[in-house]
Length: 392
Image 1 (cartoon, rainbow, N blue to C red):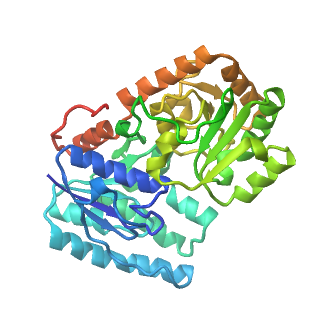
Image 2: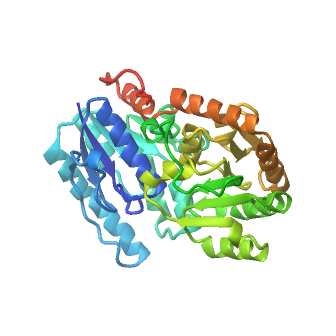
């Protein structure tokens, strides 16, 4: 079984440390566990592959990130010619699998012309994101390409219900959209993993993992931790990640006198995440009220690590975390409710254990990358070699 994995997005360094990078790497690992040979065609590498991905055949195709936004859009469009040539030279394939990017259509059109299944993974409403958070010069062209690539794909894999609804607004996508949420690699989270950053004896650690961005609810987390810390002095806030909100985060912590009770690791490589999660007593995902279309990798990792979790009642999290069973679900933008949930877990160790164990069982049963890859191959009518998830 030969699979071409295409990622034509400069913002997704396939061997990097971002959440999108981890997603690419884990899907490739899972395909390989099902017996696939992978040809990776990527615009941005972001570093060297992990040792277990070293055998992946790699075909980078270059695009300069320089120039005005409009010039970069045109260069990205022209990259379709090179991508099509690469696929034609390296084929045939049993499947072309692509992570949707704004200007790429050659992968799905190659698959369509070759009579090969072409699956397009859609992780976000990219046109809306680009227009709102970055710069989008030629929106009409982006819309035309979306219609074009959605039409060429055999099936579209949306990461959440919200993304699926967005994609189905396009006429060419209707009837082809399947919801395929994110997952976790159980082998990274064995039962006996040791804390890499343990707290002092008797301390209770509240943890967060993720890029420090405005839409992650960090201000509510700081306010909630301030309430918790005022009641229980032996508490620690462990924040794993870095980003544009770091300065605002530090300012909020300083204003509340919480710097000495907080540890910020900065950005860390993926292989350090399990040990850091093992250093937490509870993990949080306090997203504010917003247009929520994410499938947060962090929550699946929290679950696999066996942590009790507190999440906002928003988007996919409402379905993923069952309140009082696999975690505690609170209203978004409510620091008081968040503090109450954290206080409850601090006091009730039995509740922590019950929620954490249930979350881990659910993650290992229902949300492994291996199982997700098996479902993806099924959508392409390909019989996987490994028919059961690998649970370690």
